[in-house]
Length: 179
Image (cartoon, rainbow, N blue to C red; front, top):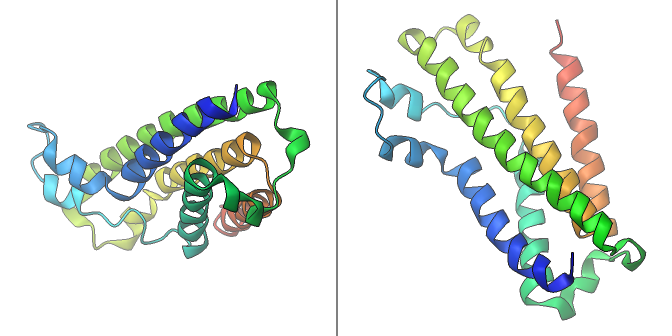
């Protein structure tokens, strides 16, 4: 996978991924959902409220890294690129992980919608909303796959550090709430 192909694919991927992650609520309101009687509670559920700010910042840093890699390659040295890992096979594996993460996030968002709709009659009840935690963990797993795909595709020291930090925090969060 050549650098020029990456410079076309990565910006479109990151824009689509951010739209699915941050703007799902508005997309969900626009789609036709005759089956849902209480679509407002489902669409307005604060999906990112319980997600650590580190993940949001990491996602935005990877987005900035992608935009700099694509549109301002002369500034890409800021992220300390590791050129020995710029190989077509490694880039293809990273792109595969990115595609898997995109599908994973779509499934996670739909799964959260299903769970929130199921318990939407009583969203203030914390015990019921804790049952949605599994879906939110799936959402976080999708972010982790995206971070891994990004630092494998455009390997640099900053991307690896961000990815490993977020993976460490993910496991710390998962084992904190493990039953």
